Amino acid sequence: MSLARPSAPTVLCLIGGLYLLLLWPPAARGDCSPPSEVPNAHPDLKGLSSFPVNSTVTYRCNEDFVKIPGQTDTVICLENDQWSEISEFCNRSCDVPPHLRFAMLKRPYSNQNYFPVGSTVEYECRLGYRRVIGLSGTLTCLQNFTWSKPADFCTKKSCPNPGELINGHINGTTDFLFGATIYFSCNTGYKLIGEKSSLCVIMGDNVGWTEQLPVCREIYCQEPPKIENGRIVRGEREQYVYSQAVMYACNRGFTLIGEDTIHCSARGDEGEWSGPAPQCRGRSPPATSPPVSKPTTANVPATQGELLSRTTTRSHATSIPKEGMIPSDSSLLIAGIVAGVVIIASIGVGVGLWKFRDHCRRR
Ligand SMILES: *[C@@H]1O[C@H](CO)[C@@H](O)[C@H](O)[C@H]1NC(C)=O
Ligand SMILES: *[C@@H]1O[C@H](CO)[C@@H](O)[C@H](O)[C@H]1NC(C)=O
Ligand SMILES: *[C@@H]1O[C@H](CO)[C@@H](O)[C@H](O)[C@H]1NC(C)=O
Ligand SMILES: *[C@@H]1O[C@H](CO)[C@@H](O)[C@H](O)[C@H]1NC(C)=O
Image (tube, rainbow, N blue to C red):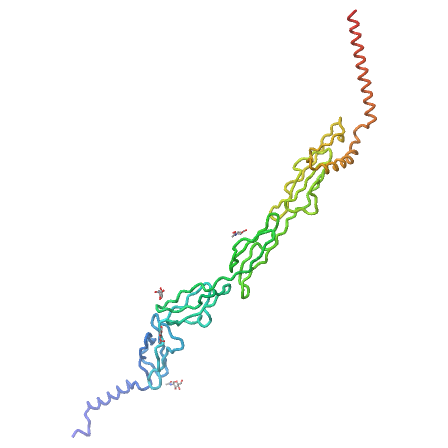
């Protein structure tokens, strides 16, 4: 009776079902569900729950785990609504190998970050260092995820021995190792021409000194000063070096004032005479005695006997013309005779007067 006309509730049910089918299409129609777990990693879902075909999800390693190089960390939603294959790709690792003062990681290891237990890394010596024979330059990642202790398998290279500094000396280290500084100084009386110090640094594949050895050159004094009425009697020479002395003496009739000897000394890098040259002062000549009669040796030491005699004779020759003011010998003689006659006459007169007085008293 009612088969031809379905009831109203049945129609409503059919329409509702159709509506539900349209609203939630089956998952099989181009969508992946959230990807599955991978050991020691977690997917970065970016807050999504539905993933269309060709979309990707990348996993992150858990703390203390490191991605194994060459292994994939990403899955893609395929046409069949399945995620692509992924296998375990995170593992425990040692930290980046230690930075060593004397060595650096060899090429393949220097940009690596996955070091599982038992893996090794190799070092090479830094510039300025050389390998120590018998010590390993390899470190191993240990069971407790620490690196084996590095030995000092590289040591500083040595610069060549700088050699001797003639008339000077080199101080500083004696081993001349890479990084060392040596200092140069000259003996007294010498000045340093060149650099005061040198550093052992990297040069090409090796190490070498930044500076060449300097030279210690003798310090010269200027020519000693000339003096008036005197001269250098000992030590005169072409050039004067440190500690050489000159001695002065005065010409006849002149007195030496000051030190008779000065020596070449060094002030810093410059030669300098130890003091001023002496002066020769003329004495006010006593009128009674001619200056030629008694040679004075007071100004010149006894050892200078030979030089003195030469100087004396010379000063004779030079001093005679200066005596033009003194009366000549003949006038002196006449003056003497006159004086004698006067004295004798006076005595005669005196005696005469005395006798005359005596004679008078007796009267
Ligand atoms: C997925 O990518 C492939 C190749 O890139 C392409 O041929 C295909 O049409 C893409 N599918 C969808 C649903 O975008
Ligand atoms: C993880 O590292 C250990 C050694 O530490 C190794 O034996 C193991 O095979 C590694 N696992 C993977 C998945 O590579
Ligand atoms: C790791 O192990 C080595 C040797 O097995 C040991 O010498 C070192 O002290 C350990 N390091 C730590 C941090 O436990
Ligand atoms: C070497 O001499 C320089 C200056 O002349 C000084 O600075 C330095 O300390 C000296 N070094 C040694 C090891 O004596």
